[in-house]
Image 1: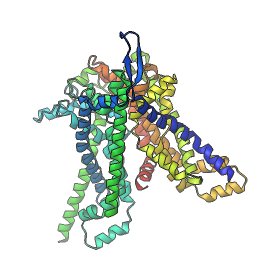
Image 2: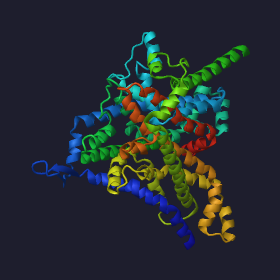
Image 3: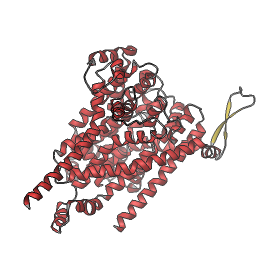
Image 4: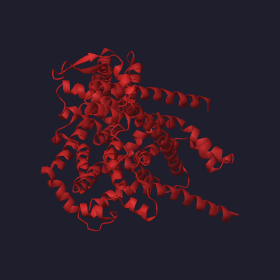
Length: 295
Length: 284
């Protein structure tokens, strides 16, 4: 028995050592950092010293219009992106799962393929497709009489949502499709015998049976959305873009740390973002969990 | 009556497959554009319809890509292969060892510990990049290979997957047999458990390889020396130059195309594994 405990320890040690080093310690360090601030001492050229400042960094972040605007952008992004993603992925999975679909393996692979493209490259491709000088799409739209500026204040959000949808739609479709395929076929046959049509079966039989997958995808999508950074960063580099360098809270933290060297403020912003993620994860799990119980 | 039903079925089939095909077009046209655009020089890209092979000059683009900055692009390529290959291999081994231990052994506090691993899945990793950068600079490893390699060795979701795979692929009887034959516990893991759970190992490897190859935030924070850049960061740097210097456009486009190829090949050839990974994640 002792030998087994020893073996378990040896097998778990590498993971938990690293887990502590790159997850637990940085979380603690971020909280610690957020409680301090750099003060210029004396005349300003005597260097700076780090002093304890309690919750000042948090108040500074929460009092900064740019940071709060970032959460506003994030909220608008989530409200547009998450319903589109869930509905789109579900619809595609149900279509693929219907008895009428052909070439399922091909569809699955082709729809999944964008996920193999690195996020930064996906953003680059799309930003080029948004840029009037480079894009055959913008040209085609213009010759069709549709003028749309993807970088304008009203166009930026849909532009980012489109990139994210392109990256994640197929991935989540595969998860839903796998769950649909795992449904016991006799349940579906029973529903058919009872006279339910394919729409009815999809909505009132299949959908409730895969709600665990739905809950999981919703949870991971919320956490991923809060970290929005790469796509808007690339849009920010576009000419005449409405996307500022502090457009999302993550961009705000990055710019506080590396443009302004204000580590305390950056840490406070990161902690606030992580707390939001924790709260939202809790809420999503509760809501989807309760629905699973009552259904 | 029957013919009407047959027509209805035909129409439904056309609608279902038509909708799927439309989605495929949306997914694939940016990739098709990437391929055709990579065959054009800056003038051709800016001139017009890049959805064609007109003015085909892929060879020229590749030559310019290889020549620019003393071939720094292929240096980035090698770096990405090293980060993603080495990192994913080590991560898969670490994850499988931990997942196996969670599955096959009982010890006090096991499920609490596993719960902590699952909580780790939910941590927004970008929020950790800044404190990690400051810790790394105190350890003196900022702007080295280690700064981007060490953090990617941890994947809590990999441990979760490994536990599921270990339960599914390694029967306890096989381990009992090894013990009766006098094999030690670690030996049993290495020569019985690990080979049996290979499909799980490949799945974790594939997902982590992709995650590292695609990783952008961590290298952006950690690295300033161009020679250490992975592809993602290098292409980002080039793109930042492209507005002032349109000559960078073909470099970014051709470089992006080459950067996507290994992942597309991996996903096409390892379909069974990523599907298995996503299924294990969804059915829990």
